[in-house]
Length: 487
Image (cartoon, rainbow, N blue to C red):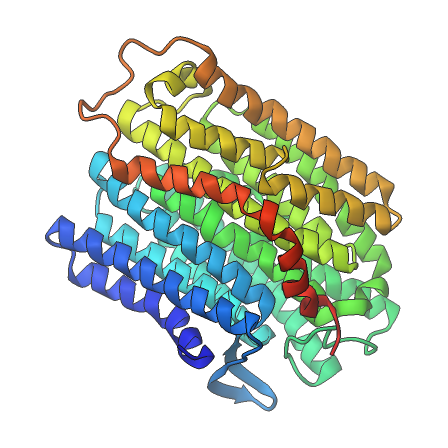
């Protein structure tokens, strides 16, 4: 398969998946098979795109040209291809898991839920392969529209409020901040293309660079930067398949990827010119990491705890991107991948627990590891990765982040990253340990058939992914070097 076909396939497969899931909503078996096969097709195309980049191939797909030098275009490049391959692979596991979840929980309108998850995946692929700021903006708006019904799916007062908060926050920040930043970039550079070294390199004065960086970072509110983060915590009441999609596979990781793309492909070395804003944003991200980890410790609903934990991990990726070093960009890329793997595992695990035991509180997890050993083994591995314990993928991401912060002469940023890791241990470590350290409840399962393979296997396989970066770190460093190396 050539690179152009892989690019078209990875963008189109989830759109076709969304349509077919709605067409084949009955019987449930056909719906589920369609959903799983569609996610599998996206993963296959994404892997071919990754392989094409590894072999030096390129592809560029232009859909429209609304302005001079501005195309609605998508292209294959290392950062987007790597992100898409991991997210699509995890998305396949999530599709299998969600088929089991909707059956176990008797979810209302499962075809609609699966369809919008596929649309969110399509928008995320568009963001990953966006060739310029305009295409990124279009994909970003599409993801907002796809995420809204995922949060509002239950239709109750809380879900409606959370969905409205998502829509208002993301639309206001993107239209009010991201769009002006994009127009400003076009005015300064005459183009919006993503390019290594930054399209704005050498084109901005100090004041403009600082203001523009602030507009971009706060305009991409999907990255959980305070104070635009509240919609993410409110979304924790969505159905479990939607939670995995939002926090691990689409919205939150897409926001982090957007920040890395802006830093590497729009600013490049110009980040050093925006030094005041850059240092301030690094401080905000570092403090936010610690605060979110502390808030997670105070949450007794496991979904809310994991939501805040994922937000803290995403801010680590934001911090790395703003360090303006190759090591920082690499740390961000590793952090996004590690967080996707760990977060997907954790949310699928708690979804399986809720579906089979109806337990959602921290105190209710005591001893459950004895009743669901495979599920909680995956939960424990993902928790260790999220904390940053070697040899799991999160450890290498945090090591690179701390090293990059020290290399940027920001020892306080390295200290904040280390402190956030310790705080992550306080809210995830005991949760995993208590699940195995106590006697099993006498009546763990509310469903007599226990855990089906659809609920267990994806958790175990996604947890195994947290070990991949142990052997892939050096090859990935070489693979991603074009991202921060100007041509």
